[in-house]
Image (cartoon, rainbow, N blue to C red; front, side, top):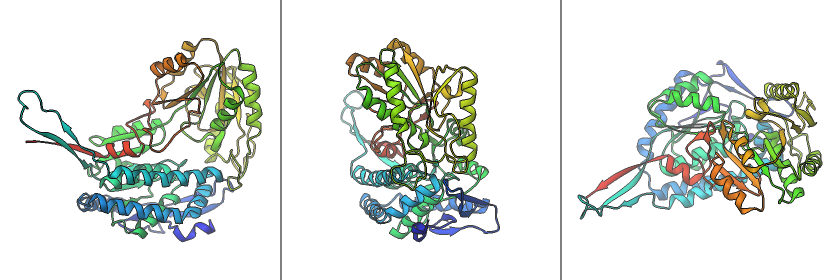
Length: 480
């Protein structure tokens, strides 16, 4: 935390100023491994929330008029400033999110990529010429032009406190919108540090406001008609609840999943087991596209399980500040207890624990990589998003049956298929109900330029820089 101090403020950021009454109820932010308080942030009052909305609305009236070149220069300054402060942000992410060092470094790299891609996408025309070659349009010309949608409410989760916030902030700025960010109460410091960078590089007041508030304050923001779009990343239950509150707003939801991987007999067993072990347990499984369900061809099941156990046992567990750590702490004690309870329920219903299954270190919120088998639908570890270091492995006989099994889930974010058979790839692509199918790589494969989002309860709309920019504008038609 010492290295993070120069960019760190512990109040809400409204109209390029820091707001917060020390006498108000406060949010206590802890180091997730040491469980030591590292910051105290006053929760925004109703008046401060109203000030943030007015600031965002008024700033939009001017910022929407800025040229592409002006916004490009602002993004270039942000890129340079974030790159310069790299180590400070990495340390913040490790501390408040409990993210392993190497993975926090990767998050910083991805954040820089988001800005870089947005700079390039900004220079691309976003309108189109509309065909008018049939009566009564013959002789006329029609074209569309894209305009910024207006002030945007962004709500981001704890597990990528920089990257997932920037997936909303950067496309919004690129398109000439303003943003109010409500970060996760578990990881607000990274967002506040980024707000400080925005002020430093000259982002106009009100273009980005970061509000630290309770659930009631968040609902006030969601319901306010002056904000024209809600972009939410988080759990499915909360996301759909907020969508119902949002009324006329445009809504983009990036929600949860219980990602499945299919392992065919034609794959390289050792390489596949190693990849999926990391894909299941990296960051203690606290990624919405972590591998949670693995279905393995019966002919290679026993060999795959042994390889998977071997690679899982080699994963480093412990302090996220240590290089090489893969499995760090669970985000808080309530989630640690929930994970353990779900495993216990599965065991009581007949599931077999192959590895793990007991709390490793309650003081540091460490839960070991856990492998289950003999599971069935109806168990939470199968049906729901566990968001922990837990994976189920099941033996399958027929390919079409495993596709149907995966599709039973209410979720449909990403899935993967490890195979060398083209026929299986084609069948899976046509029948799997997911937002993305990844071939011969883990379900957690993602580039920030990809269209990212799910079907069913996993979301609505798409992120990824180009696609978020499209979501954050509206087309107007001109005919002459």
